[in-house]
Length: 340
Image 1 (cartoon, rainbow, N blue to C red):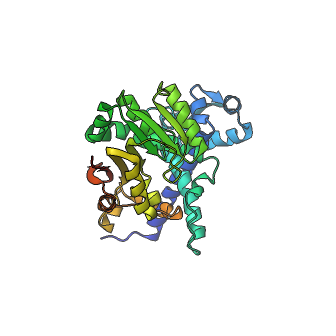
Image 2 (cartoon, rainbow, N blue to C red):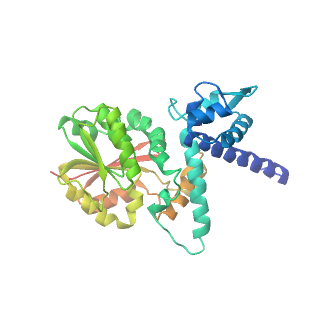
Image 3 (cartoon, rainbow, N blue to C red):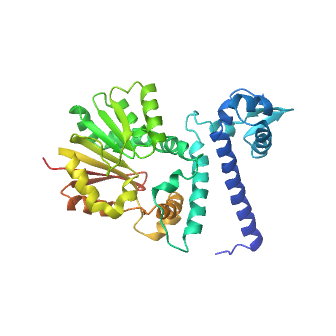
């Protein structure tokens, strides 16, 4: 095995640093609507006017975006390259999540660095500490996972079709911008849904998106969570999407509440990243991000889980579990059914 020289490692570090810079630069463009505003070419001043932002910042951003290949220029007129166009949040298969994740990751890394000496774990509030990040959290998750949910999970997990057959009610705990319930209601015409979330920004986005999709008569969104449960009727399905690990330290209480909130025959549907059984698997390119995110989760008081841990907790609460694995085993959906 060849050992890399110091120069080779320095070159690798420089490439990684430039990659981080390029994603940070993309986030500036995403957050301020610059990629979308460049649907038609413009000067920096014209772009600033379209986006409603400061021209001085935009001039510097345009030069940097040109340097990193997001823009081409003819004189003082800038236009999107194919790469830049792919960062438009409205673009099919948008690259926007990578930009948002990079800035969120930098924020969480800075928090982890500062908190490590004391061991403090401040919890979910850290997600709201950066005003530029929170509005993009729901859209980031939607762009990252909604298509996968519709293509892979909805057709495979039979509980969703059963919910539709009975005209059932689904509750999404930690609903974000409501993408999960919109996908569910869009595929199954008889399903009704209630989304609960602790951030008003998410509730606003979810309500508006349901209205645009013509689903307001079947979907509603309100403040709440598992510990401030604001649904006053037994329901047929309770979804927790990449959220169970946030409350795992109270799992006995969580699953007891899920059991109590479900009708007999109803199901808790838990979608979680699957923490691998062996550490060596973390070097797989598909899992490296999960390893870093697990550090971020520790800042919030959480950690990622294995399906067998979730199944055991379900059995302890009286739910009958069944697990589906997706994406070469990196994603797990565990359905716990309350006996009739």
